Length: 170
Image (cartoon, rainbow, N blue to C red):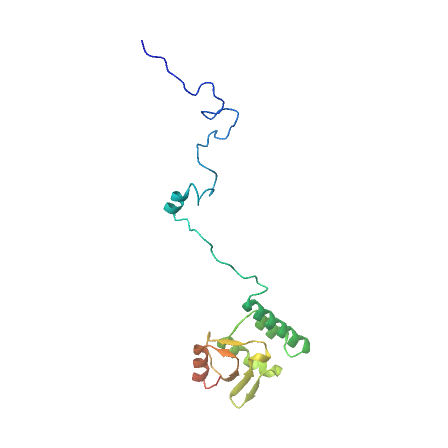
């Protein structure tokens, strides 16, 4: 005759995941939901899965960032020129959609800027001061076919090279 089974937790209220708590029903003993305990009791699991510890960086608010301030100042200057009547609607929309200016774009609109009085033409050489439009930097994208003399605060080496190859100066 077999020996009867002894249940040592019989008579206790909480052993065996009793019915009054319902904290383990169907979930097992996971130690929290989601990423709870990643730096405490689930630390080894966090290391194995490649969970990074520490801070991830900070993005400055748009109201403080320098690039947003320059774009805002460019757009404000273009609005002023349009109100004064120095920019027509087509040129205004073209420039307003570009936070920075490439030499190829300048080559496209230089004739229109001469007509509006923002740039000047002496012989075959066009002259323009980009700070008058609010731009502080000239980039090297695009193709230059006209000789342009540009006055600007900063210019990329590629842009300066393209302008000099076309017979202009920076």
